[in-house]
Image (cartoon, rainbow, N blue to C red; front, side, top):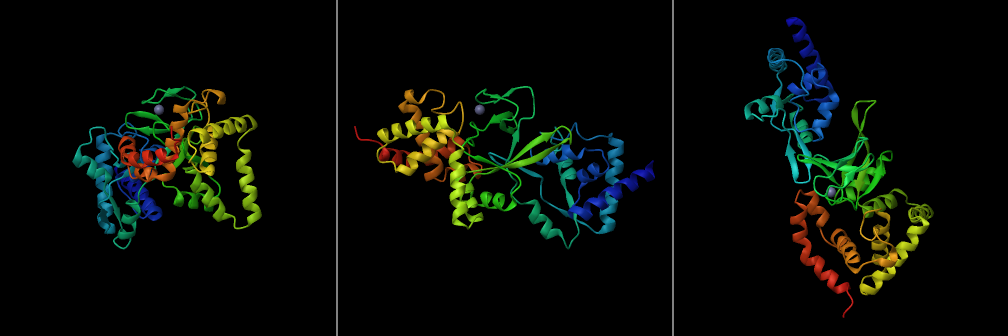
Length: 351
Ligand SMILES: [Zn+2]
């Protein structure tokens, strides 16, 4: 058995180092099937609080694994890399915790990874790359609720996983983002480049036992810019715009037109294309949103005002950048308030 453990540790470490150029105790545990790969991946994405219940094997086995691993590290002449495991959160990057207790020494031990001296610099740079914000698609048949607003999160709904529970996209202030499904690598890359706020969308696949990437969330203007860059041909660009327009179904069209009319009465100084954009987005965004809960005839001035404010925030201030940099929604709103008020006042009708 003892010899067997030594061989298993070495095989796991060797194979991981070969593929990833960096390896630590956790990766060895994965390679030895003492930690399920999908759990390790979910943890890396920040979807698990810690790995405590996920790691198999008693303390005696772990002590052996670690002894053999360090022996191997020394033999290979690998060097430690001092980069913690990090995942993205709305309040900035967070350091991932292996055990529930979070004992500093033990954490450091399990999270120190090793690389060959020649590869160290490159590996370190890669490990320190800012992680993606991860949004999940609810795969659960059971409805759950947002910890802030208690809105039900049905199967197929997008949400964020935060330490205290599930957060809906509206509470995360990410509901203005549009979903771009995986499949077009160039479009995905460009959209992310232009989007001040973006996230990766994953869904848990029961059959494959892991979280699978479905696409990304980006701002609509970033997607448009990326699309137009991807198609240089003018005819195709026109076709793209046509397809976009078709996304609004007939009854929504009437609603959007009524809304645009109401907006131009209350905000006569707002440029026409922006009126159209606000009406279009508020309509497309779906049910439960500003303006969608009542019929177009009953469009309330307050509801319209909220839609206009949201538009100004996202389009005329650095609000999305602030959110992306990990500043809280409240603080970000406070910082842009003055600018938003100024533009709003300029657009309003004088009474
Ligand atoms: Zn919510």
